Image 1 (cartoon, rainbow, N blue to C red):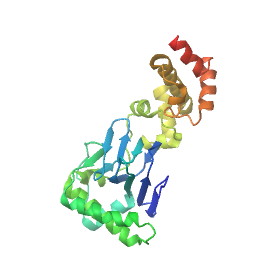
Image 2 (image 1 turned 90 degrees about the horizontal axis):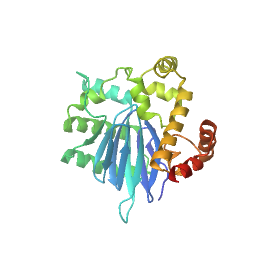
Image 3 (image 1 turned 180 degrees about the vertical axis):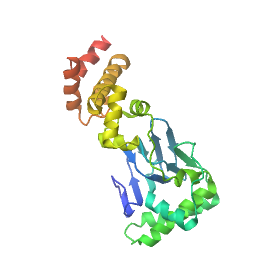
Image 4 (image 1 turned 90 degrees about the vertical axis):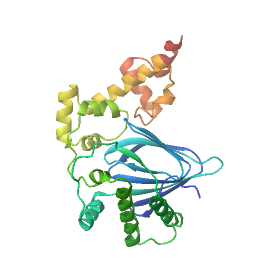
Length: 276
């Protein structure tokens, strides 16, 4: 078995991924808190603020409303295997009501957290694996939701401070627009997603953006990506083919034509001039 995209074990909630070759996902957008159970191989998460590497047997909790990239590497002589559980807000609200849980303050810790292992989490980890591996076996919604609820309770047992992380259902507050965009401009996502991630309506985002950067979002994004590319080519001598995807361009041809239109020369010419 070699799946190029995660299989849904419980639609929208529990996913299973199995790979035999390295795969780098250029853009990941987490709308919900997400729990990753690394069965084997290595996973590297990169966001604007954190880089986290995890190996088989480890658990990672990823915070909602984030952008990042994932690099999946099979174990030496083996494969990559992971289980992903999406902790959707409606389910967390249900758990909060059933268990009489609520946030009692603002969470101020890291946005992505490696969960310290204990015997309860290890046992939970092992109990989930058969559900994922035997994807041909029907997993009822009730069974799957019970496993998710169990996982949430064990997270709180391991790290009680996660109560404020998981059960804060307030709307995203307006975060620093300038800081966020300078850290995340290279992600190729719609402007609507940038608005959502900064806690704004689309109209509010465009209005605040114009005030902050004196430019419409799409124009600024294109200009910022191209200026960064020119810097990397001229100063760092990086090849255009090695950077265009990481700067949010979907194709090398589109990047090259946009670069030439802005700077009057092709990226390859810029590279040649910087070397000689």
